[in-house]
Length: 352
Ligand code: UT7
Figure (cartoon, rainbow, N blue to C red):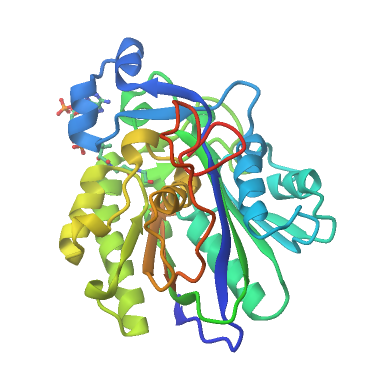
C-alpha cells in the first residue's frame, strides 16, 4: 500500500512522549545467563544495554507515562481523545485490549480503542490508520501508542534472541493542522516470511508450551530488514517526489546497528541525520520508533520544517514508512543529563 497524504485536512504530530522501565540489563549480565559476551553483542548488534519491565509492569503501565506526556504537550487531560490505537505484540492480555485499558486510565470516555498487531512495524501501521481517521474527519484527536514488553515472551535460555530485545513504549498525538505534517506513506507485508519471526504458541492455532517463546531465523530477518528498510524508504520518498538529500531526520526501526548502517549507506543518508538509540534500549519492537522520535525531540533534532522519514519492519513479515514535515516545536527537554532510569525527553517516570 502506498499513497500521498492528499486529504484537504492536513494532519500532524502535536504531542510526543516515551517511557522505558528503570531496570537496565547489561550485556555482561546476559553473559552470566547464557553463553554470550559483551563483545559479540556489540559487534553483531551495537546493543550495549536494554531496559526490562518490573514484574508488576504490563504494557499499559509502560504506555501510560508516555501517553500522559504526549497529551500534556497538547494541553489535554485525555478526556478529549476520540481514538486510541495501541500497536503491540505483547498486550496486557488478549482481551480486553490494552487500548481500552489505557482509554479508561486516561479518562478517554468517548474514544474508539483497539490494539493493532504488525510486529515491530506496528507503530507505523497505527500511525497510518490514525492519520486516515483524522484526515477523514472521524477523529479530532487521536492517540497512537507503540510499545512492547518483549521480555515476557523471550526464551531466557536462547542466546540467539535474548540479547536483541528490550521493553519500552512511546506515544504520539495526531491532530488536524494548518499545514501539512504527514506527506506520504508506504506499508507492506509478506506472509510467506512469517515463520522467520514468530510466536507460534500464542493464538487459536496453538496455545501451549513449548511454543510460547519468540522464535527467529536471524539471518533471514536480517536480509529482509536490509532490503525493506531501503525499498520502503525509496518508495515513499519517490511517491512524494523527494530524494534522500531532502531528508533531515531519518528514524529507522531500532533492531540492530548493522541493519541501520546498511540501510543508511544504501540509501545514501549522511549518518548525522540518522537517529540511533538501539545501543541503549535494544529492539523494543513497536516501541522502537516512538522511543527514537522522543530521543530526537530531546536532542532538539525535530525542528519545524524538518523532513522526517520513519521506517519500521518486523514480524509478519511487515514493513512501513511515513514521511512527514515536522510542524510543531514540542516542549524542550530538560537541560541536565538524565540519571540512569530517568527520561531524556521529559517523562513522568523512568524513561526514554
Ligand atoms: O525487528 C526485527 C527483529 N529481528 C532482527 O532484527 C534480527 C535480524 N538479524 C540479526 O540482527 C542478526 O542475524 C543476528 C544479530 C540475530 C545474528 O547475527 P549474525 O551475524 O547473523 O550471526 P549468525 O546468526 O550468523 O551467528 C553467528 C554465530 C553462530 O555460531 P556458529 O554457528 O557460527 O558457530 C551463532 O550460534 O554466532 C552464534 N551466536 C552467538 N554467539 C554469542 C548467536 N547468538 C549469539 C550470542 N552470543 N548471543
